[in-house]
Length: 246
Image (cartoon, rainbow, N blue to C red; front, side, top):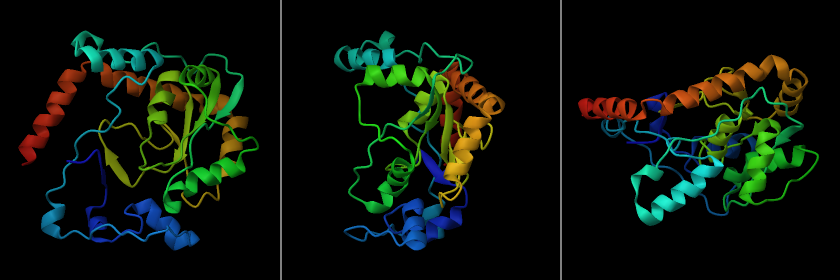
């Protein structure tokens, strides 16, 4: 069971430099190399058949209050502290800041850090890390949240964007299937190409036409909120389907 699976199962037969399909892309297309070359394992048809889609890390409270309640639960194990994210901030709220891209690019693998380093170099102002409360306050005032891949394609800041009403600007995710289904191209996020060639043009076009794209942030937030409504039932049905597949 995996939190995300490749849409084309035949791709699991390939060996990927850096053990990820996108790290292999940057190695082959941009000649990016890691200190130590590590490849993923090529799978057989019988092994591929064993792969099934579990659930991703979105089912958690990534709001500011959620961080507090999650800490209390970790210490007390009192279930009432396991609550859904709140409060949500409407995308229609007036926002003064155009972009937020606070993130680390300090990865031991160059193929993993490539996207993030590219984004940081292209943006005019480097943003250092700040405390979590300040970061959340920034998101409440931000129009577009830029979220490159990290160790994987899915990042916590994706979920934060859904909670705080930011327009999610992210590398294309159409090679993956994940549950819950959060990444709908030009419906819940705006994708840019892995080549990064369209990054600047698409980013500033999105900003210039923000009012025309804001519905994507609205869709994303509504979709994310809907996950936590009857979550127990949805999760149970999804889990039962996994069992039936066996």
